[in-house]
Length: 221
Image (cartoon, rainbow, N blue to C red; front, side, top):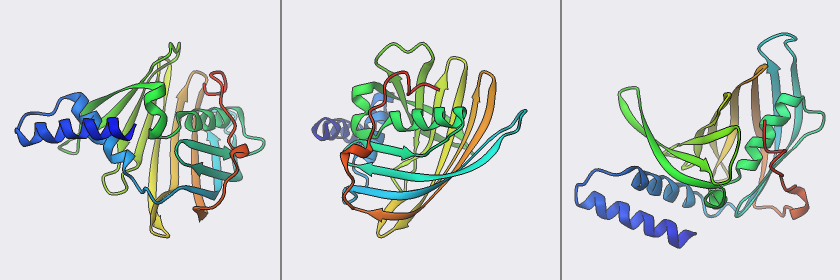
């Protein structure tokens, strides 16, 4: 995959040198190259997560739970909680099932889009499911220039959306996520999730048994 991304990057740089406008696929190549090259020294981590969830409508449920987050290269992620409300479990499932940029090409056709934000043009990745999905249209991924990590991820469904923003900090010389705030707007539910991540243990041994394969059913909200 790195060879493929490197090839895409060469095409992009050649186009830039010729002063030609970048096409959507060139933008996608640049963004994927940035994500693929982010923090190669971070092989794994374990961290604590405080997970506040709530409904914006009756019965106005609000609850804070505590769990653990795990990561292992190249593409393993997991969030471990118990007794999550149904809508929060749905967010956890779609977040974990998205995986990391290392395995996006297996799951998605990767393109790029643009929007105007604050007077400047912002490019973002557009991930379209390769397999037929009755609900998920696409996932839009906005990349933070400094951290080279997704700062915003929007799951666009045919009947709603999940919009998540992430904040980062440098811990032990590595850029890691310290906060996630998601707005969930799906049929019959308008909810929020606010996660705070702390106590990172970096480059530690993480057993493969921690990572539970997600089926198509569990990955849907």
